[in-house]
Image (cartoon, rainbow, N blue to C red; front, side, top):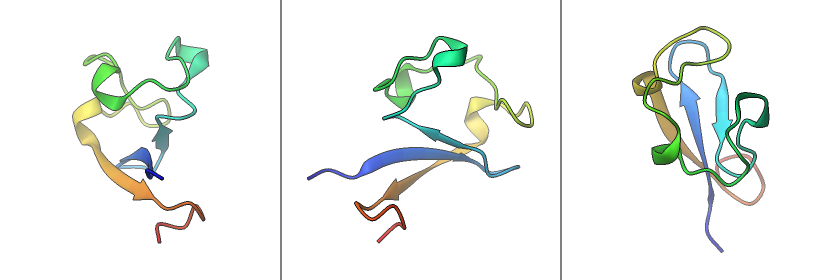
Length: 64
């Protein structure tokens, strides 16, 4: 079983989940991070996509 990849804003901690996507911004569930537009910004603090870091979450949702 593969881990769910999530990306966290290093400024505010907001999480983008590849599994959930961001339908309100026309990013469908299952959209890989590399397919999120380069000009996309954090919906909470406005930081650039480059200010996110990948976090692998285990099946228990706690990172292990």
